[in-house]
Image 1 (cartoon, one colour):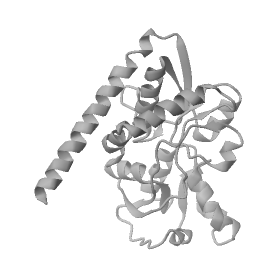
Image 2 (cartoon, one colour):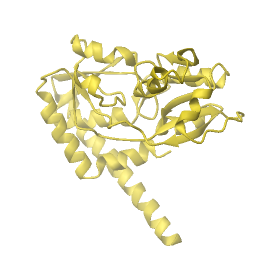
Image 3 (cartoon, rainbow, N blue to C red):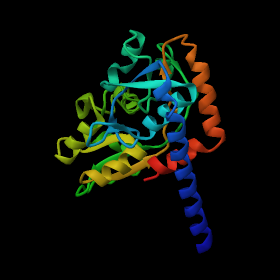
Length: 259
């Protein structure tokens, strides 16, 4: 059994290295292309998207869109935006695409077109490391103050209890950026933060917070958003399908999101 664990770990490492190699191979095409894809994101959600100490975009979503663009011979131009204005900016033509761990919801599908899902994950609830809060089911959250991102599927999830009057809206604090929510959690201004599992894992290494609960997400998956009728969506879907079938996205998920 121990040898099986060693073999699995080595295999995962090989796949992760291979995914990075593929990334660099494909992105070499970008410097030779005159086609530019202006991509909007909210880089406050590591390990999906964030800025490194030199101000460069980094993360799972960042690598993915660069691979896709490289395959299709496009250059990527980034736009840093608040999450809750990304869809509107896309509709107004200020950007060509959105990749920001954005869930494919029916409400958003009425406004923009989405690629096929490229990843799905679980929800997580963060609490302060010193907190004695004990959550056994998601609904236990209604007894505490909760922080989450404005316009996120996590806030949409909370509205089920707001609409039924079980959760007082004043107990929910909305933030432009998820990292701001975590800072308020660490400072004691909210009791909990509702987010996704990979983000929760990452934040537990950066702030005095820990995961209080992980549970299945109602999220149908996250996708890349484009304007209604944008014909580039067909090519993007084709590349995503290939990256999924060849195991590249799985390898990227191991490298970026496994914690």
